[in-house]
Length: 256
Image (cartoon, rainbow, N blue to C red; front, side, top):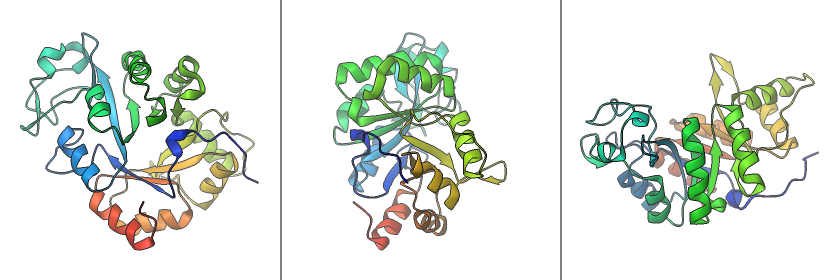
C-alpha cells in the first residue's frame, strides 16, 4: 500500500520527469546558460545542476571544486573571488553562471540542485527565499547531514532528495531488512548501480513508492537502459543526452 504524503509543487508533472543533467552535454558546455537554453528549447522543464560558493559568497552553478577541468581558468572556486571566476570560460566559450541568473533567465524551469559544499547551503536557501522559488527547486547532496540541515532550516517548503545514507537504507529495506530512512525527503535520486551492485530494480522502486518516494535515476545516456528503467516504473531520468531521452519518452507517449 502506497504511503499518502503531501505532494510538493516541485513534483507536479504528468508522468516520468525528464531531467537535463547539467543541461546536457553539448560541446563540453555543461552547466552553462547556453546549454540550459538548448535544453529548454528542446522542451525540458527540469534541469539538474550543482552549486558552489566563491570566496566572497557568490553562488555559482558549477560541478567541480576547481575551474581546471572544464574551463580555461584554474583554482578552487571557494578560494577565488567572483571577479576571477567570472573571467573563466567553459570550453573556452561560455561564462560560469550565477545560479540566481539561471532562476531569472529560465522562469518556467525547475531545478534539481546538488549542493557540493557546506558553505553553499545558506546562500542557496537565502536566494530561494528572496526569489520566492521554493516550488522550483529540489535540493540534494551526497551528504545526508547537509540535506538534513537544509530540511531543518527551510522546513516543508523545500523539496529534498536522500543522501547516500538514506539511499542505502532504502536499498537494504528493499532486500527485506528491517531498515528504512526517515520519511523526510520526497525523492530517492540514485545511480543504476554502485560499485557493481545494482541499486535500481523492481523491488527498489516498489519499496520507494510504498514509502511515498519518487525514484529519479542518474545519469542515463543510452536508450536501451532508458526503456528498461521506464518499464520498472521510475519517476524520472537524468541524462546528458537530451535528444535521446526525448526520443525515448516521445516513442513511449510519456513526453510532456
